Length: 386
Length: 131
Image 1 (tube, chains in turn yellow, green):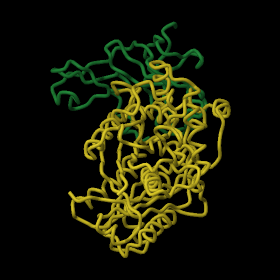
Image 2: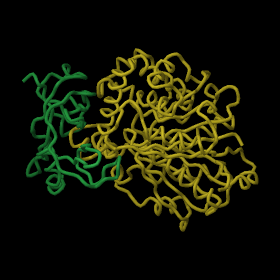
Image 3: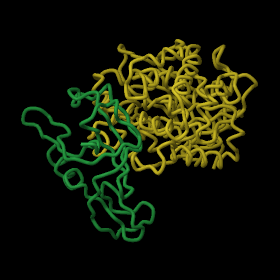
């Protein structure tokens, strides 16, 4: 296995981007990454996309996107694992470069979610749950995470304030991120008073519906050195799965898929969770950040909520989480999210995060945790300063 | 919903049929070919018990369109008396009364329909045991 690194990153505009189509968004991100890295060609493309079919009626993205980015003939395929599609695309690119099959691979992600009604978007997202035994009975994604929240509150005494603290912190970080969909701060009271979506989750506990794309260039260390651009190494990559149905989990207050993925990634990198300086985690709902922080082993079960409330995971805290603003404030174009998490770690490790959200103390090791559905799949990457 | 997709689930939705594996004695709902813990394929088809306790729940207040007329509605995961867990709506009570630990039983109900000439899908809902 060869050493692998990230040398170029690019993002489209994120938000309700009604002037741009799925192909436009992807082209913007892809060309930005190519330009940034200064590569003269790509060897292949892996594009993460949860549901081009249901959101815009478009599948077969490998063909369309390579054509529209001006690279007809480029080997390309789509990778799907619900909201973890982007992270899985990064992993596919990582494996292709590590194996020696290719030298310069793009991992990208894209989702165009606002071309359909809210009801259709809810349906498309819900296909990441068990269609015949959850969605059939009226489950929505906020509903599934709400059930995890009630179970977590009952078992560990997790509170409304702890949930709100996740949203307030992430919006505080996102307010300093120029690509964030919702770059503004919110208050604890504002979260608790916002409209209820699925008890106990209010709308400000939920990540938004977002259009957007993100792309990274994955390559060898030798090529990165020749390009002369800042690069970071991918030293760990892990994937885990669990039941698609929440009801069939042994314990609904933890995400076993994330535990497996983090364990595998840490082992590959030869690291312990205590060696990780900061993380971008999948905060599709506020409760998710709490559960994930425990599932990856950073906090003992039931302890993450209090730690987040106490500020331990703020930019200047002991273990910053979601310095980008997370899915909550930056936005959540589902297939692109996992790639954007890698971009945030790249920016932090190369000292390029915007003023006010650059993590102090020159962090050396960052982690991304991306997950699909209610935790049926998860992918974790560990990246280090080269 | 295509009628075959609805019809195919009748054993689960109408009769609560589940797989009980020989080696582990564990029951899985819906039915499946392989015991995920032992790899065993020898099984018998059993019917789930129809009583249990709510282990977690939510109240869906922003609902998909097919449930707009009954929104807000309760949704719960219930552990049945044999230890199997099932997710379904909670009917016949004020949503503010739903709580963890509540005793419920399963009843056969209309779940959703597709309007004129569409399939009407039936299945199971939980109702409080105080009825």
